[in-house]
Length: 618
Image (cartoon, rainbow, N blue to C red):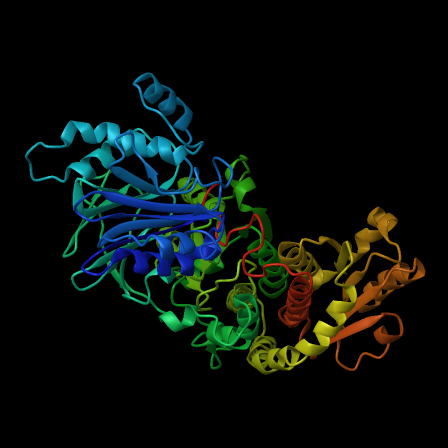
């Protein structure tokens, strides 16, 4: 969450930084700001609200001039959204500006010390305390001769006092040819240009200018000039620096002809599934092939238990993965909220593997779970979408989604990609145990048929919109299903509440009669995911219970199912596939349903209130 962009070069910094901030606004949109140095001092412009509404208008009236600068788009943690709490923040002297992602946990103690030393503060943020702390250390080095950059020295000294997480960018009016960045827990990358360099919390911000990047590691401090960069690590004598190439181009992160990124990403899902399968289907051995697990066949066969840790939409994907892996591979699977796994002393057997799922590869809770498992001596694998992300680099092995940039805050294509990968993983592990070749090939063929089937569902968008408008004014929804599709009921409810702000609850259909059915009335619609599978008769019986209490019913059903249409008020149809793959198809009408309701209610689909794309603080 929150976005950082820094630039040092020969061009005017302000337009480049603001362009990058617009690309990162999905990570935080409470306020935005920019600081530019020009050799004569420092200029700052910041404002509460969206970039175009606040910062953009200010810059049109009062452009900033200079070729070195930093910018930030904020998702509030310490202090409510306001002009004063917007980043960048200045130190006591007004010469040092800082933008910061993360949380400084000991800011109150440091602030008390600085207040006693005569410092005054203008905001209620922890970031301003950090800026003042850097400024206090800078006084020790300013004006002294030496080969080391004074600003970098001050940043290093200050960060040694910080408890918490940070991704920061720092500029100083006295050093107009220097940009300093550092990270611990919050992502930060260097973009390498020709006579110019960049700093960003997300590659989307700089991909239009360079595809050569360095992903900073925890405790790295980077000193960046126009021609070079140097990286030191606070915890070791030497820093590990590796130049990587971004997998995507700038146009991949553009909205194109679509009204919203979310709609674009929903429509990209047929290609997402193709990318998840590409190069991983092995027909000759009737299995799946993975190049990055870094485990031998013997090690994979020795797995006695898998724990999957994730958060949000990824947690729902993990629930589907539990069904898939247990059925196909007969390996016990346990699903954990990543944040709970970190803070309880759960017993973990020796032959247990932790699998974490994170689209961004930077989710703080999920990263903490991975580190906890490795600390205990267990192998930790990852499914993530961002090459070079922290989770990708710190895991023992893993699988990339190759879904491309996902900008919409409400995840769609990453979810579907994860389901496809978990299916392949179930086949891969199953073929090492008792899954027959014929069954494995049947699953592979069904997976390869999914892109065309997804296209047929997307072609129903207008029909789904018509039904969505019918229910757009409802205040409450229930989403129900059973078996493989129970997690899809949870995901459907999450999508609706995330982007339309309607109260929605997902349940196992069997649980309704154990309490929630008391809430059913003619004003409360229930969405049933009821494909023709092994749970069909049971789910239809639950559907009849809702109908008997005059609750409106919307059903997701298999094409050709005439029975469900006799009971439900409205039906979305999905193509027939294997039971294990129904979740991949069934979730798409729910995504479109939530999208069209949110648009009808006038909600900002891509930037829902109080939410940010990637949760990088705990």
